[in-house]
Length: 227
Image (cartoon, rainbow, N blue to C red; front, side, top):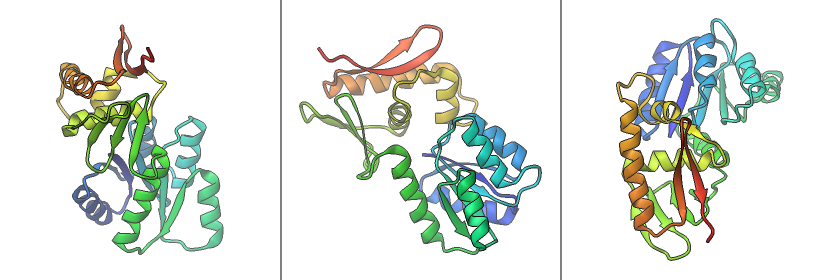
């Protein structure tokens, strides 16, 4: 799961980044509001942790602009202020939850897990599309019609997770490359095609009617052939 952290206190950003990576989040970190909003515009993140007091643009404005752009990624807002008015402003700006500094690591992680479940509409940790069932805890892919299942590799899992959570949309190779390998990766687009091939083989193995279709000149989308 890819997470965006926008926090201008460098020590805190570094500490939070390390904690989140230990919890198996893929973390991109920025220290100013302008860069943070630009990263949000990429729409590749599953969760956003957003500080209020940022140089360039504050967290309230960032959240508001993100929602105006149609980005629905869950946002957890961080602030040193505990005033009720600040919390109300944050939630009205588009944040989904609010955490006041200082906070316990356990509470931060619990809130992120809750937001992730809400964002994926998967209260039991399972994503579904067509005849597919994807267990987000064990990375297991199952076919709901025949019960056949298989364990996915990390990249295969992240490809299917991204496709399922964006069902009905065509995802470009660039979006997939950045989502799976990150902005700073030297991965080329042929890596997407290679791992797409691996993922398709797993769909075939479980006997799914759901397919990953290539849309010529654009990208990929999930389709369910109900025949």
